[in-house]
Length: 340
Image (cartoon, one colour):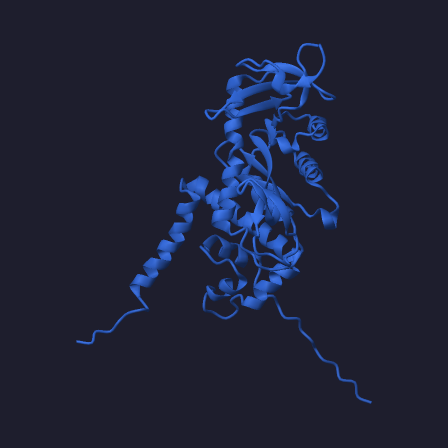
């Protein structure tokens, strides 16, 4: 009896994460694996449609690589840590995993989408994503507030001692505020008008009923302790209540911090407009998670280039297009031959 031994070699992957990330940076409208394969250099071993699809479906999703690439861009003892979530629109996703009805600040209603919570470091000018989580309570059992606290725990382990941890009123629960205090950080947030505070020792009342001067007022937040609150009124009459556990904050400090907090809104806009984070059409949760992670890492590259060069994200993308158009004009493909 003759036993034949076959030497079987596994096919080497023809694409890696950097092929996909670089494609996301360069792409303008279509962000599919098919389009990514069509624009690859015409040479042996270029990533194929199948290899790029396998990349999204087989790689183990990880947030740690984002930190490895971004940690040299932050100053862990200064700046702000800003946490906020955004909804990635998926209006036609009937059978896509991770998609569920989410509240959208953009549409001011619930829409189909994927909820992404990001931890962003900023000094007011830079937008450096350091960590993120995807809301999927059905499968992992974790709510948004639990993801919020997990992101802060990781940031603490990484040695962050930011000036303030900033977040929206959605995350201003007592448990979250005490969790931040446990890390010995200052926090800065907005409170809803019905939050109960004791301003003069005569009992708790809604913060909307407390007289607050232009320089703010120190009050006792029910079940928490003393905080400082500020009241702002916009030109259209909207009233907001800002709060911090730093009792020495001044109105000038509050104005400075509140202006820097909006950098995360710019980040969300840039991530969606220039990195195609909403554009993946794969159905599996693994592929969606990988695409989102690669999109954030693509944004990080645009942000680092933008800060170093002084060019906007839009200009950085246009430079790629201009080079492609310039190359085409040197040898146009679509011409009409003279019939004279």
